[in-house]
Amino acid sequence: GRLQKRKKRKQQSVTFADIEGVDDAKAQLLEIVSCFKKDSNYTKLGATPPKGILLTGPPGTGKTLLARALATEAKVSFFDMAGSEFVDTYVGMGARRVRDVFEMARNSEPSIIFIDEIDAIGGIRGRTLNSESDNTLNQILVEMDGFNKDDNVVVIATTNRPETLDPALLRPGRFCGEVVVNVPDKEGRRKIFALHLKNVLMQEDKEYICDYVASNTEDFVGAGLKEIVRKSIAVAARRGGEFVTFDDILQALDRTKSSLDPCRRAVG
Ligand code: ATP
Image (tube, rainbow, N blue to C red; front, top):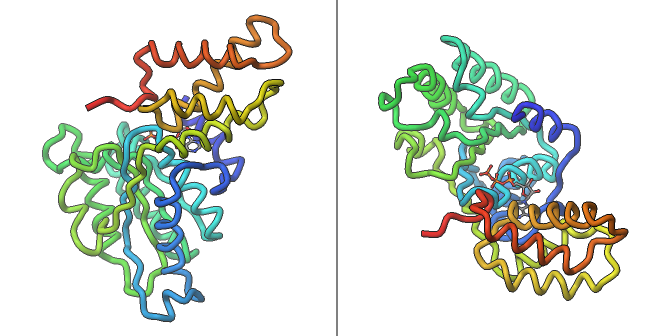
């Protein structure tokens, strides 16, 4: 399932227009990219970009989406690794794959290496029974330490649990930059919901409905808001409706709230 999802995602390019309500994170990421494109004012002023950036924040806030959009917007090469792809790997394969990816990235700079869910391999070394993930992590550290000053490669990794990472990852020269993707506020939720509702057939006033949903989804993140839209379409289809109605959305909202939906932010 996961592999298929990844393959599918690769086909269409995501842009910043597909992500709403996380403007601060967008701006910070763009700034980092300008830092390592040679023609930018940042580099002329002598800025040195971080070698590694940790994209943190609760699940479903759009971290993965942001990293992919960044590659599109920045027009740099993009190399994709998921932490989970190393979990059941053969001895030596994880480290080898890391070596290969870093080499490709160096050969096509400026480039971004993306490690989704780095916590799958980036836990404190020696604490897991899986020494293979320790080897993989060690190789990432070796590669990052081997960056030259003028290597235009930046490693972006996502995690929902930065506190579980091996402190060695956070040392200077490694993942020393952090961009936090926060839970959206009401205005952010309105924009995210409107984005996902854009192509949905409705007769009623979408603006009013988006306001209503934003006001009644206080602890929701982007993934949860998207889920409400998906469910409301299902409700309308089951009823045989030609359009999605406000009432369908209210039902979907109700169901999304009353279930223990993993898309909702864990409270506390
Ligand atoms: P996880 O940590 O669980 O991987 P994530 O923060 O990486 O979550 P995504 O996987 O990028 O979140 O988000 C899941 C889906 O929810 C996205 O594909 C997108 O459709 C929707 N979504 C999440 N956040 C946003 C947002 N800020 N704007 C628009 N859509 C969003």
